Length: 290
Length: 290
Image 1 (tube, rainbow over the protein chains, first blue to last red):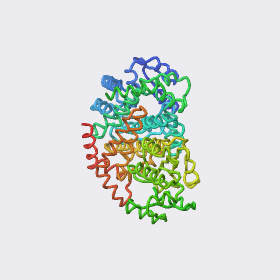
Image 2 (cartoon, rainbow over the protein chains, first blue to last red; image 1 turned 90 degrees about the vertical axis):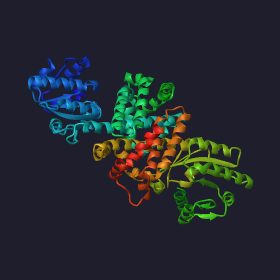
Image 3 (spheres, chains in turn green, orange; image 1 turned 30 degrees about the vertical axis):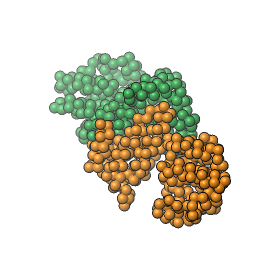
Image 4 (tube, one colour; image 1 turned 90 degrees about the horizontal axis):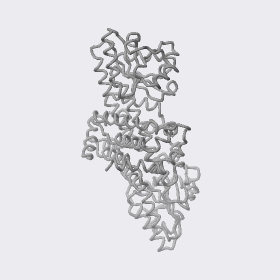
């Protein structure tokens, strides 16, 4: 996602810099490809940038924020820090606390949609008192929605939308596999398309590569569960979705989809899941229940 | 649903008869309103009709089929029996067994959609060797889909579609209540409408009267659970949906919606659920989990 954001910003005339210290070779490659200038260390980035956008793995989000705060304090730099990571509102709360009483203005940002479709179908949600900077940066090249002054709102919006979209994948697996059991998966997809064309389009677009993302989706559902629990709301569906995606991640589906050699048709995918590969999912879920 | 079907058939020139023995006063009223001629007893219907369509409460479906078989045997009548009730494929299997070695041809039919929108948005699924009779009866006035020779296929199709549509209601409750918790229910609905207009339309149409149907929806989810279980598929989501709808049925929502005085906006409904009424749902679910 970092390079997709960088490309839009560069095209809009902004200078985009980063540091590759501690980043993966893949990050280096993305960085070169999208024409982002690399700085020697984080201190250089902190001293030169007006806005820092963090796009790291969710488990590194708090550590990176903390490191930026320390460097900024040491250099007496003031800047806007935008966390654009897929983290829960609770984690955003911890990052917001990190920046209290500092020269850094904190923006919670959350990106809904795939990096490859950022400009056409993505939305950047942003909240926090300085959230307007996201509109300034991306203009109308990416859809931006400002969600008030509270950090956490943007992440929660992404989470609630994710609860729908990933939940729909779970419901589709449930119903299509039951239909396939009596040889009616095609007819089921036809009817779904008749009543909810949006839903079928989304499933056709998402499910064939879902195996690659299943572990991350399971983690997202666990974060949803935690947020529901904090709000005193029923968590059962999020728990079940997390279990289903974990099982999917451990099934052959992940390996088959992971190869990514060619996109798989929905029909083929339901067949694969319904044959030998399904038993892995079913066994694993049965084991979880016991 | 019976009177909606009867009206279409009468408009298409068929003579429609029924018996009101053992039926509710509401059935009598519907019958008169839709111009259906009442016969003294079931034996009269069996002896005069070419096709019998059963539209009763799900728990009466098997008993009615059995009664028709006995009367037909006694009168040596041959006819086509169409079960159009909301029952599981397993129950259809029992009814199909009932008619084995009889003069009655059995059709499994299942109607997707509301009675009030039968002609514009409903679909009648039909399966079994004589399923074609449903196309003959309804022509193009109602959308008919024939799903092969196996009784049970039509009911299973309705069940899998129901797994999606009722599941979407469950997912919507989960996400919208979480969004409402931080005062963002409206923004959540806007975004849902942006990404999935079909889904938002469906929720706006269905949820305000969902309380009236919650007990029936919970029962449908239990039947889905049973079918998933028979197919060796994960049942967790169906279980959670059934719990959620049972809780909804016992909440004030059922009473509020049940009055049906005026249709409620989605916004108002989310507010009601999110305030005092929600605690009933949450408490009840917590109790179920403990």
